[in-house]
Length: 348
Image 1 (cartoon, rainbow, N blue to C red):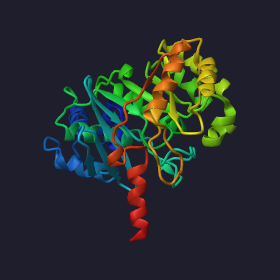
Image 2: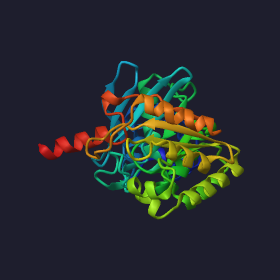
Image 3: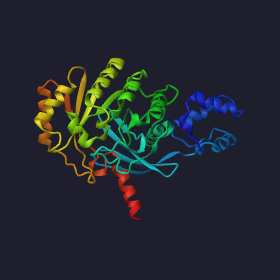
Image 4: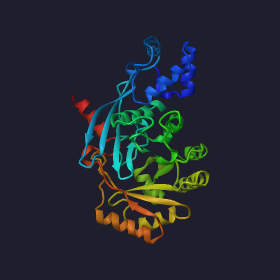
């Protein structure tokens, strides 16, 4: 079975015409999909066409099955996929608008020691339509439409490694930025990667000026290998070189995420090494007090330590800030809610 949300308007038009229907029916279906509707909910599409499509396409490939909300308005969503798998996402409210964090894989195979996403390994990649479906579900929930979105920014920072699912991610980016659909500006989309160097270079050739965010989390390869297995394949130097390629191609400064882990990467020496690594082209370091995952055993730093680390970077000429910690009481970190649900299912 296939997913209609995987199709561009041109692809959907070709499909509808192959079924012997008029071209305008594709536009009707497409507009309904971008309102977050299932095939069954499309009242202006002939029943015969809907039934024909249901033979090959899933009526509801993704749906929200649980929502957690904190006092600041942050919402954590648990989505059910058509095959019984579950994924998650987070809606964060800021002064400038609503940012939705989406997942790109069911689970993850990167094995980062501070992340809950890979506790159960990689199950499968999400299709472009399943990634888009998260956006459409939440936009509908908030009362938005394709023309008047209630989501202003997207971050590909949920469960999974986006660049490990390169083909589906690139198609998703084309779909979500298309003027025919929900029409996001590429400049309002961030993609976070642990550093798959060849695919960073391939991404730079797409002509989409999205924000590239690198999960660096260490100032040198020795420390990075302790928490991020990907460091055994790609060195920090290779990542920096690829980041410079991306900047030169897009003109967008690169963001380096750095989760502060007590006793691992939070010393003044680490700050000095980090500064020497990221200086030399437009970058910003986003410091993140670790959102602790109990299964991992790593500990976060105090606010005072985070501020001290940040000020030291600034004195060394590095643009840096501390990210506001949100969603801690609603399993906000990547993979936490999904892992909790899976654990409960295994105990049942």
